[in-house]
Image 1: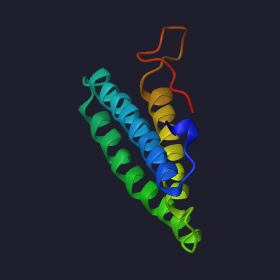
Image 2: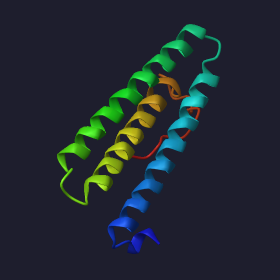
Image 3: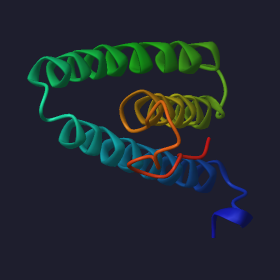
Image 4: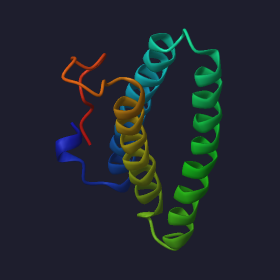
Length: 114
């Protein structure tokens, strides 16, 4: 139970689950955004290019967080929390840019939480 995680191993495990879930949600929103906009191949290519760049950025940024905490046992959870937070932000950006409308039309997917 992650609500009762106390040891470093348990905390890291739970942070890993959080990241895995955030990443799965992002991939759902990303896939849906490409399906929703499949009439525009140029846009799909641009979304994919942006996603590739975002992956490089998020990994580099969170590795710098790991380096900042490299002397402590907290380094792993700090990196995972960084990845989770950036992934949740990216999911929201994907949703707001590619899965919503300028008028009151209901969004393609519900607004992701972060």
